[in-house]
Image (cartoon, rainbow, N blue to C red; front, side, top):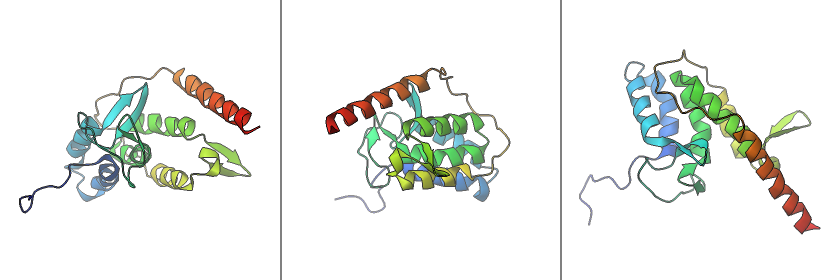
Length: 173
């Protein structure tokens, strides 16, 4: 039996990414320190891609309905929402990196004037991104820089997605 008041679970990236977006408004003086701790505990680089883990670095756990499926511990929803959190915190480098990756990994395209992701099958992804990108950017603050990602990574990912699409089309015939 658990002790009364004991935590059932630790902090999660899917909730912390939302909290960080509002922390800047609720506590402007304390927010920078809290954001730096969030960034250090959840922002990671896996397989050459920057993302937000569902569980803190060093902690493995399952995904759920909030996080979606996890790839090497990284949550797509937490990563998308963190774009807004990073913008609100003045961490423009992280916001730009995550937004670029969302375009590539989310298979973004425009059809009849509308932006769609995952062949139009993932409207919630578009909603997360719209909400995050609508965040007013704060002036850049003193954040630990992320390792630079070579521009070529996007081409490799695009080639991989095109290969998957071509193989799927071939099997469908």
